[in-house]
Image (tube, helix red, strand yellow):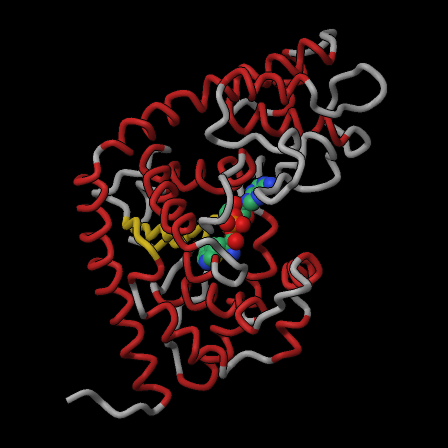
Length: 329
Ligand code: TYM
């Protein structure tokens, strides 16, 4: 079986963007691949976190992976901090990555601007840790939203560079980007991506929002002038709502446009809101149920960390040998 790797940060509450751009695809792909889905807590501390809060969010995120439909018996769901190979490989890869490459990362530039009081070295080398995550498992495919493409490209460059020096050590990973949903935009400003860190709560649908809140936010979503429901760059608000609707219902854009032909924006927004609320309800219910079962989640965490560790160590030992570290006796 081919290997799939992906991960999410436990910072903030997951949005519909995270769900439609990544998590939903993870569930669809999980039968086809040997899958590793990580809660990337090492990445989270590149920005200051409240320790108790981070711990709680990490656990909630792992629980949500299961609630969204990932079978923990078949998929390896674990915390990055429980597998030390991530940090060890990241160090080695740091020595094969250029400052100039990292300087070009748009996410670093954005975050450095936003957190100007704490531009730490971890924030700068964030993409190298992400490359380590992916390469540690010899991943073939990495399902992500469009905003992670640049990080995938640098991962491929680092892997290729390493292979050119030491032979075929790493599998070169391919990104997997969904046909729709790969970039969900803010409901209040459809030229900006929907983000966990948006200050305006009306901009984002959070996965744990109750149905009333979801419908209210969609009703208030910024649309465009005019009244036609068509899929075009000139109507980014309507386009975004169609994207959301089609990703959830798995309808084509043409089908959706036909369905809402002649309907007003108000009716359309309500329909999208109800569709999202109905889709998220069972996920929320499973989440509430699973959260109560401490022993079950604890068992998953322990078992899967061991499994991830086993695979990670295999790659790590190979890499350590290649770069010239002494053998273990
Ligand atoms: P993160 O935690 O910011 O986001 C998790 C996933 O959600 C996708 N995403 C979106 N997709 C569509 N529309 C949006 N508005 C939207 N916002 C976020 C992201 O593309 C991502 O797939 N660096 C990564 C985490 C990471 C990782 C990895 C991912 C660390 N190591 C290895 C893959 C492989 C991040 O911060 O994602």
